[in-house]
Length: 200
Image 1 (cartoon, rainbow, N blue to C red):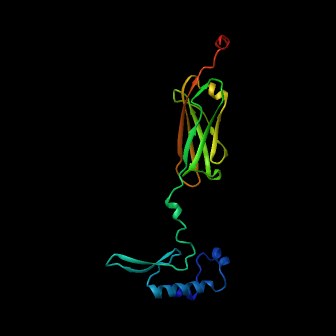
Image 2 (image 1 turned 90 degrees about the vertical axis):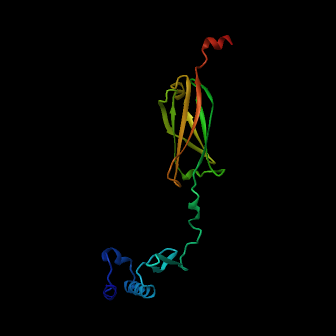
Image 3 (image 1 turned 135 degrees about the vertical axis):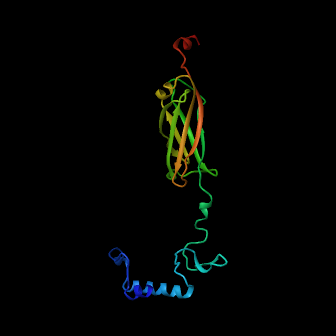
């Protein structure tokens, strides 16, 4: 079959592939495959850094050899052994009075260095009141050097009522598949009344 394909310069999916082939390239490729089989005794042709040199079915072992002309350096994929999982530090006020606005800072780093903003896919927050009911959600905004801010309005804080609340944030990046989470608990208390303010 190899000889027949080589003799007729068979090109699979010819209409699609022919425009990308040089004159005589099909014949050259079949000749290269023929030489490969003659030298190595198998058809397992690849394009990676190693190739199958020999197989020993009885011993159930194979021998791989390095392809000397492979263009990529040996450490090209080494960075993938250490996933760049962001580290989050969510900080903000511990107590807010009803009707006050509040800014919460999210520091996104990796091994102490700011995580690049352009590598962050999203930084979403959810605000829960004391009963665990979602009161608001939205996106944190980048302010530079791995720092993001969640700016809650006075109306959002007033809607929480009095008690303990939780701000949750989920960050997804372009470099790792799973999101990373952080939370911050804070309390809201009633605003001082005019009578109490006057008595002071």
